[in-house]
Amino acid sequence: MKLELQKVEEWGLFKNTRRPFIVAGPCSAESEEQVFRTAYDLKCGGINVLRAGLWKPRTRPNCFEGVGEEGLPWLLRVRRELGMKISTEVANIHHVHEALKAGMDMLWIGARTSANPFAMQEIADALRGTDVTVLVKNPVNPDVDLWIGALERLNMAGLKKLGVVHRGFSAYGKHKYRNVPQWQLPIEIRRRYPDMLMLCDPSHIAGKREYVREIAQQAMDLGFDGLMIESHICPEMALSDAAQQLTPENVVKMLENLVIRDAHSENIEYRESIDELRARIDVIDGELLDLLALRMKISDEIGKYKKQNNITILQAGRWEKILEKVFAYGDKKGLDAEFLEKIFKAIHQASIDRQTNIMQEMEKGRPGE
Ligand code: PEP
Ligand code: MN
Image (cartoon, rainbow, N blue to C red):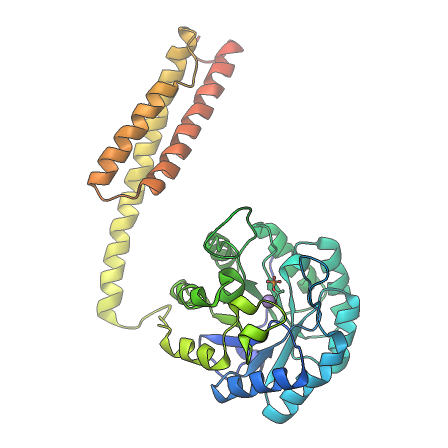
């Protein structure tokens, strides 16, 4: 389904009309003073859109679950006195009604909610007829269609000011980051919807404040439109996500140090060189495809011989030897072993699949016999 989207420049939300668009603020609104002081310092640093969670979906019970609607007037004060735009997370109809009644400028859907089509449909129905801005965080599991499905439900309810927030994916076991980035998913979203606002939430990916900067930079390098960053006036005292929040001062410093690259350039010399390099890549891709096709043809021949001689398709010893050779030669050529393993596993699997097919076809007495 094609999404009908309104351009971010027309939303009237961000003061700047160029990348990066920034949303920052505490994980949770905790007190009027904490919200106001955080917002004040962010505003002084040039940030115009505040985030603050009122209803907090926590993984385990008995954690701080947010102050709820009690915090709405605190956000309204920020807008009134500082002129910032205000946003919060909604996860059910009640939240939507309260947030709309208060006139929030923007809402976001959390990762645990975008993973649930029933919840998404209820939220979309509750938003029908409004033109509020909604950002949809990726679902906790790496499923592009589930993420897009959430956007489609909102779009079908008439919402056109839609954007996505990449916040990484849950994974079992220990990893450097709290949520695995799996950049290929937001890249796929960008491929399918090149005009949709795409922010990265480096705070929830990182889980620790010392990693926030490197993830933010990576997002900028990949051409994300902006960032949603968690910031608390006193991060150590935060009632939720204390380890990943930055002081407003550090958010501003980090943003000043980010290298922002342009998506395009008008520089003729640059365009000519990049065009030439891309032309060479296209030729090489063509050669790679020809070679792969040739390799598969030879695999097919091998499949036939194995069938005729009643030999198993999988030859563990031979596969070991291929990998050994690949790693040794790849190392000489400066190619990463993990990368080679992925590619050759995929090639080997495709080859086995084709041989299996051939054996089955021959068993049925069709080609080759
Ligand atoms: C949040 O933004 O504080 C939050 C709960 O995020 P997520 O839905 O990404 O876990
Ligand atoms: Mn949080």
